Image (cartoon, rainbow, N blue to C red; front, side, top):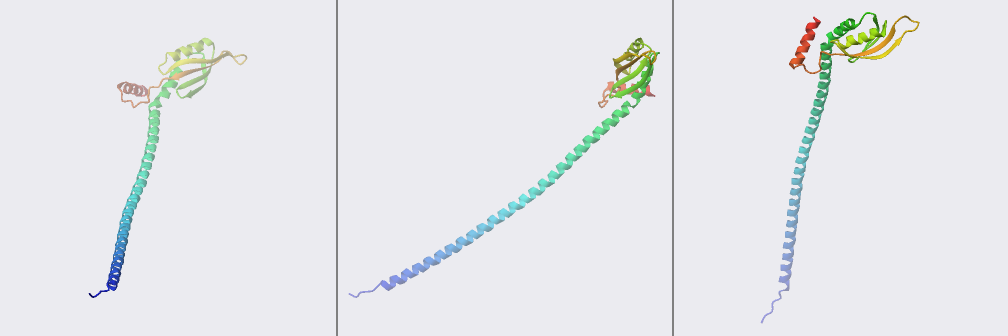
Length: 202
């Protein structure tokens, strides 16, 4: 029976399988590299797209912040303008009042009372003057209490003059009655008051 030596055949098969394995390993490595590169490019594109969206959002946020700042500035300017308009409107409404007040001061002064100074602080009036007697001062206060434009008379100082002439020096205060309320004047009462004030000033 002849004998066949299979060692060379097995060795060639082993080398062939080893070569196939190396080729398959190389192909797998190449495929893995290609896949990794594709994934890298995909994630890179996603990151770039997200970065672009973030940049757009930042730009929009900056634009909105600028618009909000402009709105706040406009609101502040609006409030200042409204405050100025209210002051101007108040001054326009109260313009004839000072005429009535001075006219009323003249009406309420009894004989024998002379004013040396009149000071206005808001709606508070302060009178400095000289009276022939304290009775004249009391009469002046009663006239103020019954006035249409003055009220709440209060005597601060009264002293008898010694050596500087007859009579007494006095200081008293009174509140001015305003016919120009600070509201919008839309109510019938305010319109009637304003109409009466305008008719009285004509």
